[in-house]
Image 1 (tube, rainbow, N blue to C red):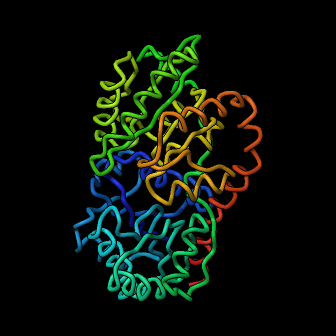
Image 2: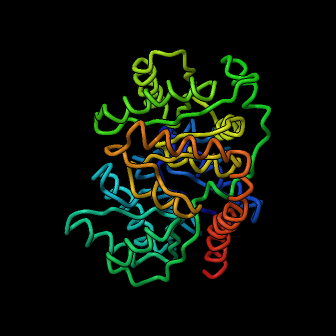
Length: 364
């Protein structure tokens, strides 16, 4: 029985990261049903309950040491772990797990990482030094590859794959339909979903989304549903925007599983999202998407599906947002079919991450 330890931003109630973990476990277990997976988590009990794997605390260094010592492979990823824009300390933490694994002579794979930005001379040097000691690197987009090139990471070879969530299987619409019905968001009217997040305390983009919400409800006679991806923070941001809109929008205020969120998204006619994994969920479920960027990872993902963001949080306006919404709305029946081939290729590349991980164990 092969043993893998997974290090990432898990157990923190971020739907995107939990979806990544669910997808990783799903694909790895399909390839090797006997695989034993241990996850380093901020909330081990929650991780064990959600994902059915063993979990250990992210600050339990004794438990981490023991788990890595027994492991055949350590996976760092997926997600945007190796950057220091949203948090300076997290970069050092994830690099320290990698360093510990190498100290114990265990192979390490950077798994579908979204690399960078990494700012500052010492963090960039450390990132380069540690990265060059791992056994396998896959990144989820070409922007991450360029970031590694700028860091002068020359080994091991880097393969561009795709975000792990893109390998997850689409789910039945029934679960999401029941949730929307419970919140009086189902019926004859079309449904537009909006996934928002807090960023730097800025208010201007919230006012834009609030004004656009009103226009969408009136112009398309649609219901607007705010969908939280980070719980409970996104609920609070949605409540602020709803108050600005002054219209009877629907806010899903509960915490949902990956399957529930995918199913909810599958019932939408259109999704407007600041959250990366809101956009990825739309891709998996074949729903037209409109992205607003706050981070290069949004631009990178949209580029991979032949799209681009409306604008970023500082430059988005009601006019440019509504122009894209109208264009996507007019094509909403055809867009999923048009993107089908791109999503299928990204699904294949996302599965490639797991294949490479297991090949790495076989080589050792």
